[in-house]
Image 1 (tube, helix red, strand yellow):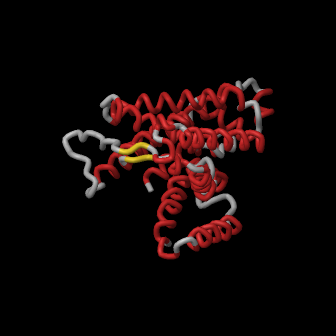
Image 2 (tube, rainbow, N blue to C red):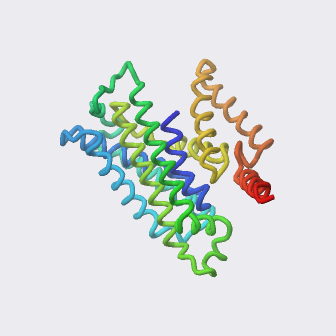
Image 3 (tube, rainbow, N blue to C red):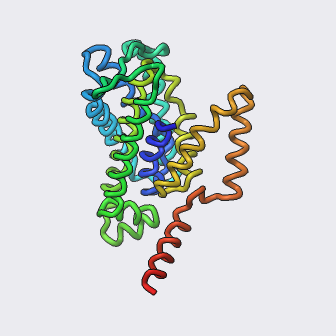
Amino acid sequence: MGMFILMALGLNVVVGKSGMLDLGYVAFFAVGAYTMALLSTHTGLNTWEIMPIGIIAAMIAGVLLAIPTLRLRGDYLAIVTLGFGEIVRVSALNSESIGGALGIAGIPFPPGLGFEYQLLDQKYFYWTILVMILLVIWVIRRLTVRRPGRAWESIRQDEDAAELMGVSTYKYKIWAFVFGAAIGGGAGVFYASRSMVIAPDNFTLNTSILILACVVFGGMGNIWGVIVGAAILGYLPDRFRFLSDARLLLFGLVLVIFMNLRPEGILPRKKREKAIVKKGSDAAL
């Protein structure tokens, strides 16, 4: 569940804050995970030493994708990002040098800071993910009230108008894409160290769609809504495992019904903004 929240927060910067539809977000998650797997098994570096390397690798992947594609909009951008995600997965699947279809095993746990990460006792993993989530929330909130956040908001509302007002939309879209990629890469590094084994099947289109569903379900652009949405969607599938394949059908049906009843998500941006304005007006009176 914590990993869903972390990834949803990263994708929310791209989709919710900036209004760009990214269907290949899992690619950055995969870049971070494979960076962790390869470096830890071949160089002996630990998770915390590899973490910045994995984040930088994901950011570089984000730049390489963003520069030629972010002049595209809407469905065209969605198709390109979807293709990028599949290219990364298929490349990993067909590259024997990085494990191919079998993936990479024997990834070590992170070294503890006064404690020890254990397979049968996951509490320290949960606490670490919580710290990572809080750090990401803090950074996003800081950016939101500064120039990048204001630029992202203007791009989301009307990109053409933002350009006419002098906002460098292309630059700030790249910033959003790269920042989201950094969060995905960091999540991938920690996921690999916790799982001990990774394979291309861990990074399918289904994962990208599920993370996007977390953002939409919770309320695009609303940090707390995204957290609630990711927590619910990360929790529900496991509760229906006894239904086997039918659980996916039931899960999808629940989402369709809910989004028809509440299309703006659990905590929609507009209602929250109106509540803030009303609160400010009441305080002024």
